[in-house]
Image (cartoon, rainbow, N blue to C red; front, top):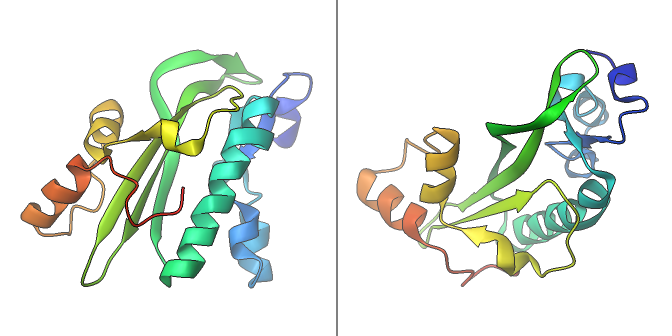
Length: 160
């Protein structure tokens, strides 16, 4: 896979880990442009609602003193392929964790298409994302804390 795999496809090379989150370190920022950090995104999604979510996650991270973010495609269904068989995901997720004395977690699930709806419309439980992806996020948390946080769908304590 190369950057030319996307040419003429109608899809952006969408960042999973956004370059703007690594501005303080030139090497790390450059590494966000590796193809392993790219996924086919519709332009209206990548430049619209996804970009808005990235900005809001960054704002929350700065205001809360740091967060953990896990981002990826949901690959249970394919919305086609481009180039040399690159899968086009139908949707993407972000899971955000703030540790500390009052830990909190929030999940977002967005279709790979443009939307003008508010970000809060895309909040889902992390349990739902784990079911879709067959992944177990933040498994090092104690089970009682993990279970409680992952079942939550409330934006309380976040600015989304």
